[in-house]
Image (tube, rainbow, N blue to C red; front, side, top):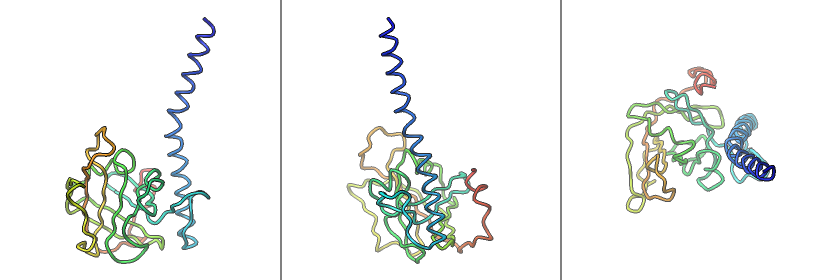
Length: 200
């Protein structure tokens, strides 16, 4: 009986550790990303959040009405998207369209609550902010439709994630696309303190 109890206790502990590993990793990663973003801004240079990272922070995206703020990483590959949304088009601080992709079940799960007129803010490494308004949201089939980057306006911000948000198939072809356009750029003095915006 004591062996069975010990086996059950060991199995339960193992499951608990594995269950807590992903949330713990996410919290630690976010802290490291925040530090890397602060250092990137201070040094005005790419700063990797950990030595073996193949990505680095390139922007901060905030959604004030949802109290959401996240660090955007360079690229749309696996490591970038595992820790935050990834910028797949756009250069740091330059004019031109920006496309950011993220996972529907983590960083971009709140895209489903955006509506026409919702506000988005994007901060570059130099500390400048661009203020966007959502123009439209739509669902597209990636098998038959692609984003034509040549047709995008210079002031466009496109956010992309998989769809449906509660779907079980992680490789489905549907994408949820949020299209926003820039308004007048904001400066640091026009923004609320980041802890107020982010709800932290």
